[in-house]
Image 1 (cartoon, rainbow, N blue to C red):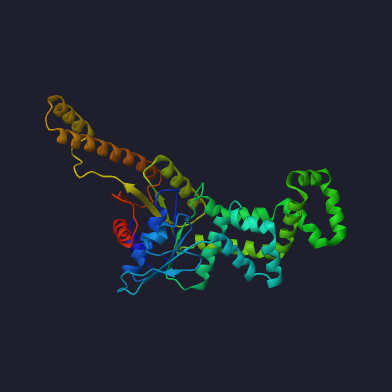
Image 2: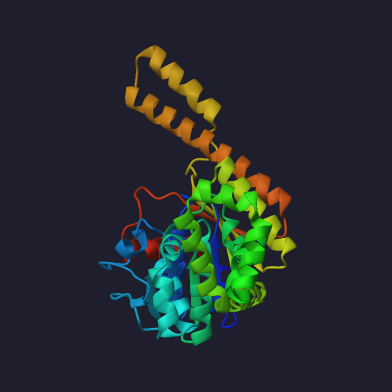
Amino acid sequence: MDVDGLLADPSTRIVVCCGAGGVGKTTTAAALGLRAAEVHGRRTVVLTIDPARRLAQSMGLSELDNTPRQVKGIDGDSGGELHAMMLDMKRTFDEVVQQHTTPQRAAEIFANPFYQAMSSTFSGTQEYMAMEKLGQLRATDDWDLIIVDTPPSRSALDFLDAPARLSRFLDGRMLRMLLAPARGGRSMFSLVTASFGLFSRTVQKVLGAQLLTDLSGFVSALDSMFGGFRQRADQTYRILQDPQTAFLLVAAPERDAVREAAYFAERLVAERMPLAGLVLNRMHRTEVPALSADVSLAAAEVLTAAGDQPLTADALLIHANLVSQTEREERVAATFIDAFPAVPTVSVTAQPADVHDVDGLRTIGALLA
């Protein structure tokens, strides 16, 4: 895969790094952003949704928040800049509310207990707000390149499913019934109460009357914004389908991670989203591939039996394990490559230590390129 060609192309405006958790998406996104800024002179922002804050540490920043912060100490000779930010999903949700309703209505929404819970912990909110923030960044047109480090979800597909899931929630039968009293007045409330019947009383017993009241108030307050949610979700989804967006799958050479990448690739193809390639991260290799694992083990056994050259015997055993690991990783990677022969790939060699600074990110960027 020609990573430099992708980063240098002015028509590439968004790069989305996705894959299973723990495969190095955050490091990959940061390394791509640094290389785009330093080598290709692009004004770049990296949006991370990583709660571990590794991106801030690796870039020498004391903290990241919902506002892009410029990364100091990068080589600016090419004219590029690197900025980084970490999604604050509650603040992003608050911003959406403030932008699309009156100050009085916004205050009512912020005070609602159900909103407070939903904006912080509701399943899928983080993924949806990541899409919201991406849409906001793209709309400003301040950036040559936006790189997104997708949420560490149970499934990488959650990032793509978030807009549709929100629309289903907004169009749900239960939600429409809760909205009916606010839209139709007391007579409508009586009708809806009658239609609830035993079910309404059962819900109150399970959830509690106060929670049901809070939920109804929350839905009523947000009623005027629902159309805006759907519209922005549809707009962001179209942005993801645009040729100016490039999806990069990131996977470690492990069966579960590669299987997750394959699921994601199938989904991207089905949704007509531009898949740029696969990054096989933390791959191992040996400097002496001609010396097989079997030969190394046999030689180590001979030396051990003779009681001679114990250090050499240990080195041969280490080499045998490395060769076996390399071969196993190549077999795992081949399952994706065989299934998607048209998808370009790039391998990144496993590093002796975790990446924790800009120099480390430069190394990863060079390996990617």
